[in-house]
Image (cartoon, rainbow, N blue to C red):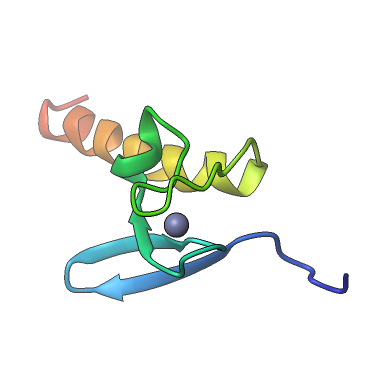
Length: 74
Ligand SMILES: [Zn+2]
């Protein structure tokens, strides 16, 4: 297998965000969908543990936190 990336991601402008493309059913999966349960909500494909996926899930949370801190004047 010559695939350099295990997972494919898609950036969208509306709604603004990043989506994971399911390797099995090609549906777009939001980080919210896999935040607590790392399976594809459409075909139940198990996404497994992967640094790319961790970044995908954590990045929006980090951005949300930093926005909250900024709005509180920290
Ligand atoms: Zn799927």
